[in-house]
Picture 1 (cartoon, rainbow, N blue to C red):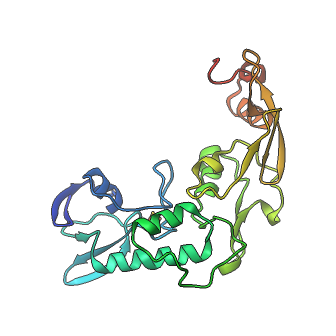
Picture 2 (cartoon, rainbow, N blue to C red):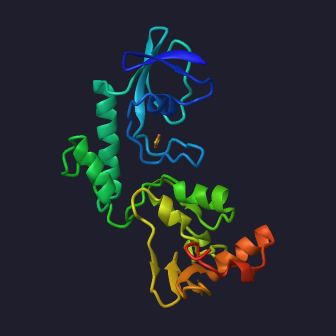
Picture 3 (cartoon, helix red, strand yellow):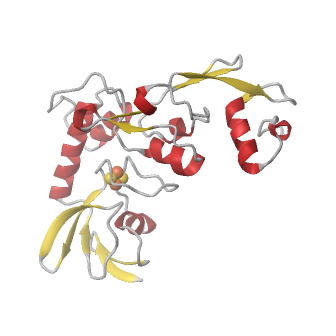
Length: 238
Ligand code: FES
């Protein structure tokens, strides 16, 4: 265990744990956008910045990737921290002016809703947090989507920005996206649209509901060696 202080409170944290998890374990809330417990943190959004001091040196660090250290003094709400978070939000609002989530967080933090930077109209609600890419790669095991381009042109999508052939239509990227950028539509008649690809849905043999793309069930069947026929029942009926 390591001993540190967060907002003046003495805290003990497991060696190797991040400042974010140490703070949250002790009821100290730090705002995040790109953090998800199921995935390794990458420090993409910078919403979770905190101020750390040790040995007479003070600096701003990203709490979701910075590890707890013996004797560290952490301030999660200092003036400097608030200013950096506001700047991050102003940049995110310029990139994704349509994102309700970003606007809501900005409002909670008292950020002026008027854009400070030139706004972008073509990036949708994507904040480039990469949660969708990581979920597809390390949870689903498919790696259908990725980031392409650099700087201002960077965006998420299939290879060459075309419909990703490897996508199985599971929708994990939709569920994990913090801003609602990725759109998935089920028409209720056996089709699902996502990433520009149309999937045929399997019908539950008990209740008749369309419940999962056939491609996803085939993928699960191959991975688990469970016959496809045994997977043709929705989770409720199972
Ligand atoms: Fe830490 Fe996004 S939550 S950088």
